[in-house]
Length: 117
Image (cartoon, rainbow, N blue to C red):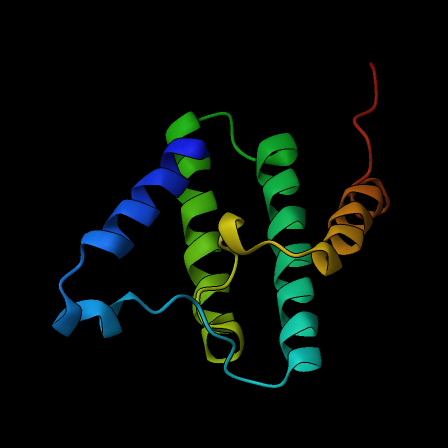
């Protein structure tokens, strides 16, 4: 994290003046409450899909990676009109944390546990 901060600071300082306008960070495209709700729903759906693919998904590692990448791209495209670069770990805010916990706790309710034989 310290290296990333140092690299970002170095790029910001060393970038030529005519190109500094290209260094804009992420920006929300709707009002704050709508963006927070959209980011929360995206976080909930992503974590629920992540748990489902990892715990109940196929045995093939390649297929699991492909499914997770498809879920990530699909949710990113679905939320891009609301939150811009959504689901970026660098942009995580505290309002999505309760929805992450909700996804983790609702997973056992949506998927029955394996029965021992």
